[in-house]
Amino acid sequence: MIFKRSMVSELANSAGGVFTVLFTIVLAVGMVRILSLAASGRIDNGTVLQMVLYNALTNLPPLLTLSLFIAVLMTMMRWWQDNEMVVWFSSGGRSLFSWVPPVLRFALPFVVAVGVLSIVISPWARSQTEITRNEFAQRDEVNRLAPGRFIETMGGKRVFFIESQGASPNEVGRIFMAERTSKGESTVTADRGTVEINAEGDRYIVLHNGRRYETAQDSPATRVVEFDEYAVRLDIKIDKSLESSKVSAQPMTVLFAGMTPDQQAQIFWRFSWPVAAFLLALFAIPLSASNPRAGRSLNILIAALVFILYLNAISVMQSWIEQGKFGYFTGLLLLHGLVAVICGIFFVRRVYMMRWLPVWCSPWYWRRRLILSKEH
Image (cartoon, rainbow, N blue to C red; front, side, top):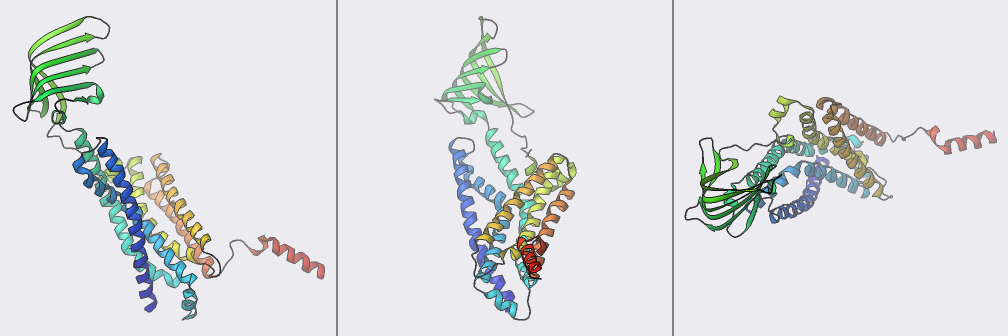
């Protein structure tokens, strides 16, 4: 009982410290990136904190998985270095398998949290991020026009310049508009303009008392048209519901309904994180075993290599599923089943003190046999 309490208590302290450090780093990097987007005008300044929150929720599954792995590894390595493992091994005939129940007792809430974040919350955060950016990109173009400056719309094909603001919120005065199409170029000037919405929800700028100058691409002639009213469609429906189009932002119900290769790859990615958190927590137990007289650099190097290879293997398997080589369920069984087998091999080797290779594979074995044969 004392053994389990001390183990869980130290794991909690280590996990809290590791997660705080990692989350602070990721939050700072994400905030710098989002502030740069806001400074360049790609997102609204008023949504910076909202976007930072969504970015943090998106990165929580891998952060919690890595925090759990490092916490178990660091705690177990400290016990080995301080000879506490020798004390526990000598009391009651404990083996390395005795550390599995307390580690799982501590890791299971992490695994559940990673599963909820990866399957439900992170896709929702991605969808909200995309919707927020789409709302800013599709905002009413007239409201984004400010007097005294040129504003490009439609990817630079249309340029507005407003000399003054109108008397009402939906009215502007002295408008200049230049537009480039595949047939030629046109320039429009008007005394004033108003914003109107038709029955279908399309929004227009209606220009009043102006002229339109048209120049064909294959002719130097210019056509001048005077008008009382001229409507320019903004291609925005104010009642249009914005939905996420990225597969990574779709809910699980949509993914299971479609089951395209891209959607199956996303299902595999989301289910992989809770499984990876569970397996890495177990994997950290045999990886932490070391000789107290030796350094622990080799254990840290091997643990880092295991995590990097595991993460890259998840990405590679996701790419194969996107290419249609495997289904999501087959990918989960193959990859995580292989990791579970390797983890079991590490446990067996540490518990029964087995060699990685048979004795006869060592050159010392054959040299000793040669010496013994000469003596006889």
